[in-house]
Image (tube, rainbow, N blue to C red):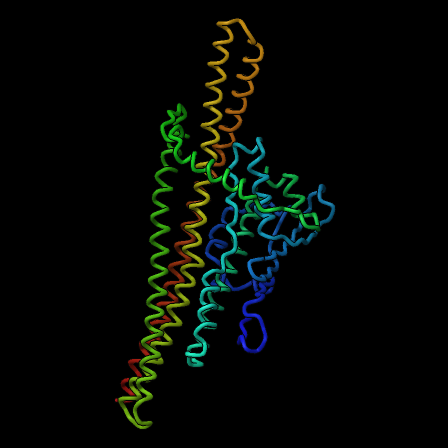
Length: 421
């Protein structure tokens, strides 16, 4: 909740989303939740949901409820508290598993970001003495709206990450996932050290400069086509992400312009006498511009919460698909190196058995990865196409509703002009 800073309460100290709120009308769900739901399995033997989440400062605690009929779990119903670092820990454990090299690992949810609300809060504290009560109330509502939107996004992203894992036939059997869902205490998941983060950054950057993936001549037509598609798709979705982000920012700028113009007109209209048609028209215009600001803000929030988040997620999911194909290419390259080493060993008549064993291992690994990767990429395509189709339909429905609301605002203005005239 938001309180006036002078009453001794801490602003935005804690915002909670409980399950009664999460069982909300469809229009209040994030588009990502609705669109991504098409990919979840119908198998209900293991289900997870975030039933509650609380925030204090930068720390968000997610309360996760699990229901299962699987015998390996000690209870049929469990509830644990987890922080973002523990989600990162679970994602890292998945990436470390060699036997998951042929699987598309769901993207790790991003760290909660409340910086926009924090900046506005700082601005309010600094300029509060120079503002009118109306301006203070408007900024309070703006901060609360942004904060709740950011909070809903982070809850949605973390829940979808878990749902993707438990709906996958292999990930759902993972012992680390079971510990994550079942173990009541803190997992002692520490954030990566500065050195570890630097190593990860260098490794990721090196992959970007590694041309072996782009230039790899794949004999399998399916993987060659998918590699070409993913590289083109990542470029396209990056452009789309920039476009939708700019569109949302322009919507916010329009909203602020409506609010500023409306407030100025209301103040200007108040300079006239109390009984004056001109002042009435000016004040009415100002009040309706303020109403238009509210509509534009709601639409901008929905664009960010729904369309932008859907695009961001599938940009990350496409990167996960690229990582999967990179692991396959790496396995094939290792197989080629092992075969060359075997040829040399046969020529020198030294360590032939060891070289043959290395070839056998590398061949098996590349075949296993190729077999599972094909199924994963087909599922990725099906999930992506269905989610975007559903997402675009939902976004269009929201646009239509907001346009109707905006049309009513301007109709009201026209009717007001007629009544005063």
